[in-house]
Length: 249
Image 1: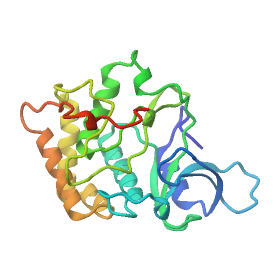
Image 2 (image 1 turned 90 degrees about the vertical axis):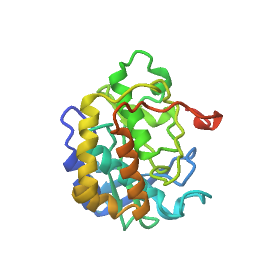
Image 3 (image 1 turned 120 degrees about the vertical axis):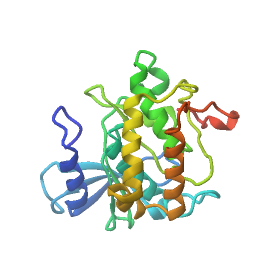
């Protein structure tokens, strides 16, 4: 099961939540935190192909001075829920599983992707592809948007991954996508954010994201969305060399 032409997000979410057998297939060795490739099956020894997923357990997270320990997997899921509600950018279905091989963590649909295709190698892509990503990173306060976090599937669709360093209460924006500094969000993007703002006050997002983030982090998210929705808002410029992550890919 994967993002083919007839991709069914809800079916993938249910499979990630429901399939009971989670088998370790390998370790992504260049990751900052312990990140595993797993295969989900109905039962151990099942001959069916099953479903590949990326597993990020809480206990595999590297200690950070500015993000609370054991919370990065929750931020991954919160970013997915927000992107799903907005309709942009495209983030692989991501859920919390309590019963992973190394304990509670995030499970995300695995994507087949060409590693040579990423943001910095996509000069031919229209701005409509990347403006929503840049805006999403502002709203989620993404502290680590590397070019390699922008994947292209076999159908040519762009997906965003790696949202563990998001939703901090202090300004943390670090990204390679600064080409839209000074640009204003489109009317459609603003309308989507208006819906999200209402839902974060008393709706679906208030309930779902409120279970994953601290109360003050949700409040900070509301403030960032409100700032974007002010008349005349323009996407920010980088403030220092720290504004670009290293390595950039």
